[in-house]
Amino acid sequence: MTNALPAPASAPAPLERVPGPAPRLIAVEEAFMTPGILDAATRRAGGRPSMRSGPIAGPFMPDLLDLGATRIAGMDAAGVDVQLLAVAAPGVQHLDDDLAAPLAREANDLLAEAVRAHPDRFAGMATVPVQTPAAAADEVVRAVRELGFRGVMINSHTRDGYLDEERCWPILEAIEAMDVPLYIHPRDPAADLSGSAIPGFTVGWGYAVETGTHIVRLIQSGVLDRFPRLRIVVGHLGEGIPFLLDRMDGRYPFEATAAGAPALPRTPGEYFRDQFWVTTSGMNFPAPLRAVIDILGADKVLFAADHPFEDQREAVDEFAAIPLTADERGRIAHENAERLFRL
Ligand code: MN
Image (cartoon, rainbow, N blue to C red; front, side, top):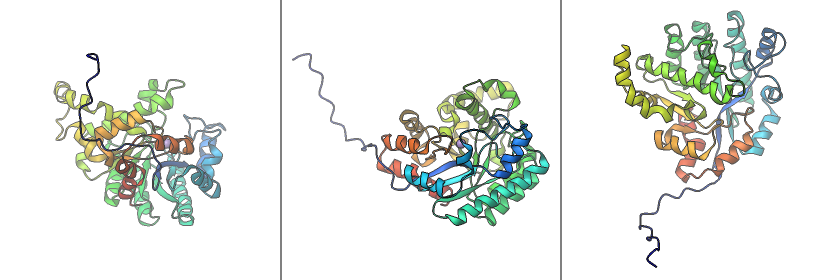
């Protein structure tokens, strides 16, 4: 008897966290491809598009090219109500200047047509020719004002350059002025980071190194103080950044002083909590999702399936199996997306 375990302390019952289906499910990092971009990328790659030359060839292409009944049937089967769509990485960012702008406009027009045909099932994010910043800024304005797009998708680096560079500021200025979120999606790592593209781990590791580096550059450069109303969305539960924020906050003051880097008016964690949202693309797993909710709050997390690169049915089932409160599930499944992207 003396070995009996103590009775559990009578604590207030925790909020009930149960698996369950979402009332409405919006998936915010869903991909498509246009024949025009596919053709240009295929010619550029000498007939064989690859992960490096983009777009990723192979089994995904038929699904990527479909913006009609088959895509909607797949959404119905999976339980996805709305797909927020953008051209698959790297968009037009790997193409020559003279092709990038017209093919981006063509892609945005094509997507706008699909959204007009299925306004309750699709919404659009603009593809922009980052390599020609003035044209990209014009396309941001056109896509939001004329096509009704809800955000802008940029696939990390463009010719190894990043959005904190002054030449890109007109793009950030246009996105901020249009009051839509900027979604920074991964692509093959830039030349400086090519060592992270380890065969078999380019997506699982290299993409996070590439995109995480982009996020840190935006924070460290001070460009977010120039554009303080810019709202940035990143996939894959924040590309690892949420897990490192405490360490960054702890080490930045010392390291920045030693390195002669500028003293930022906010801590790295404050920049991330103020101006970033994360999505569950490719990361519908219970432990990291719980950690990210604890770190950022359930208001900062949005569901994504990453169709067709992930099986959207599997993503939905995984999300449904994660224990969440009804309030958390509602926010992550649709309320945050409705507010952030005005869906
Ligand atoms: Mn994706």
